[in-house]
Amino acid sequence: AKRDYGFTEAKIARFLQEGRGAGTGGGYLPWLTMHDVPSTGLSTRIRGRKHGRTHHLLSNLERGAFLECDWSEDVLDIREQFP
View (cartoon, rainbow, N blue to C red):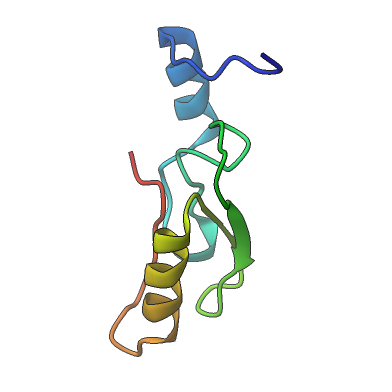
């Protein structure tokens, strides 16, 4: 395997120290990025319209839900891969 995709206490502590899963709006950092998990399907990084940050989406279903939320006037913030 090219990378270690398992979670250890040290890896979780590092993610918390990096600020993953925290923040709001354009300052939010997702808990998982597309480089953190193996995928045989379609992963997407897409710039959001609401805050201008890159969103890491791990499936077509997530991408579809994201696009619906990103264009909705009722949605104020989108936080994908929330821990």
